[in-house]
Amino acid sequence: MDFNILSAIIFLPMLGAALVAFIPGLTRNWIRGISFTLTLASFALAITVFVLFDREATGIQFEEMVAWIPTINANYHVGVDGLSMPLMVLTAFLGFMVVLISWKEETRVREYFAWLLLLEASILGVFCSLDLLLFFIFWEIEVIPMYFLIAVWGAGRKEYSSIKYVLYTLFGSAFMLVGILTVYFTTGSLNMIELAQNGVSAYASAIPATAMFFLLIIGFAVKLPVFPLHTWLPDAHTDAPTAGSVMLAGSLIKMGGYGMIRICVAFFPDIAREFSVLFVTLAVIGIIYGAAVTLRQTDMKRMIAYSSVSHMGMVLLGIFAFSEVSMSGAVLQMVSHGLLTGLLFAMAGFTMHSAHERDLRKLGGLARQMPVATVVFSIAGLGSLGLPMTSGFVAEFVTFTGSFSSGAFNGIQVFVIVAAISVVLAAGYCLWMLQRIFYGPPQEQFNHAHDADTMEKVYMFAFVILIILIGVYPAILTDIIKMGIAPLV
Image (cartoon, rainbow, N blue to C red; front, side, top):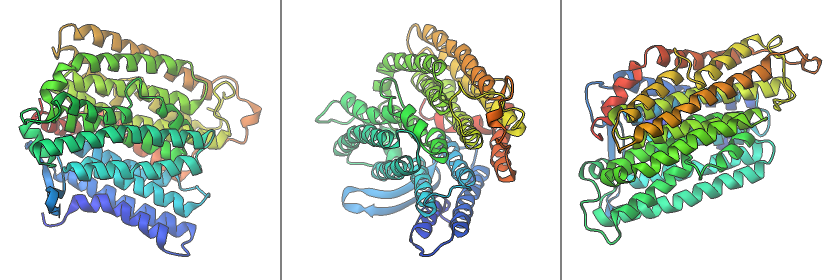
């Protein structure tokens, strides 16, 4: 295929950001139109990659490679395999959805859409990069738009949350950069495929391979977020605008899990296995702690944010259980969580804008005014607690069963059984949240609340269709993911 389809997927949103930011005199409709067209085009190309992807072949497909900085052996090198392709398609889908979610945005529309499109492009770049330097540059670009989206269009303590987000991210990135440099000085290569095939531990190095592994994984652990490096997440989620929360929960934190599999586990398989007990322990703490703290929340968005800490713990558990099934479950959990939590944040934002209230203690009885939103919010909530026929059930089931039977170390079964308690807690907080928002006697102060209009129904139903499709027919993803995970295992 001569057409560089992955570059088009990455750079169409970036082109949109540039057009929106720099063409003078654009009206609001033009800005929305450009954003809509270019994110839709990027998503359509991502679907094309999904359809044309060879499901029988392991290894990288749609590869593009151009010499970039020859003196240090750095290339513009992109490609996708069964691990990155589902996350790339998810990001392109969410990038298109957040344009629809933001359709009624009226504050500084030009900058808002420019930052949103740049954020999408940078995350797409992370999932497609196969060169460590390129990977790191895309990883860092994302900090800037996310900072402005929270600081300018957020609510609550938005300046505090945006600065906290930047500080945590830069803290992680500093370690990661040192890790990438030590890998480069040791091996002389930035090619992620070569490094994964050869492993880094085999090279003689000035610093131990274990140190390199931990330098790299700290950056990914902050992003995922792993307990106790998670405290930026609830603040950033709670105070971000709706579209920012959707991208943050849906795609951005998945960069952490993806980096762990693509770089830490692939480059240092022996060291990752050696420290599996540590990471599985942190995973279980995160799963139970996140679910328990979620039960205590009274703010709708904060509740969903803490549930993400719990669900990302399952990703960490699946990765460090080291079986093909558990790692496939971890990737499936990332995709499923992206759809479910993306929809939950979209619905929380819609409910807040409609009822002008986000405190669960003051809400109630909204089902009468918002019947469509009630049904969609309920599907998202039930998917999140792992109801069969939704993507959440399949992802959690595969992760837990794969981890239980993995034999990564003696006694992992006990860890998995403890982690599975979170399913009960999830049922508690999801049902409690839905009951507090929509049921009970209707309240007069919410008589002004309105249901979803046509545009809002489009994005709500798009999410619901994908959540149920993956729940009913998970092989649409697991067959692809397996091809990405098999070479690692």
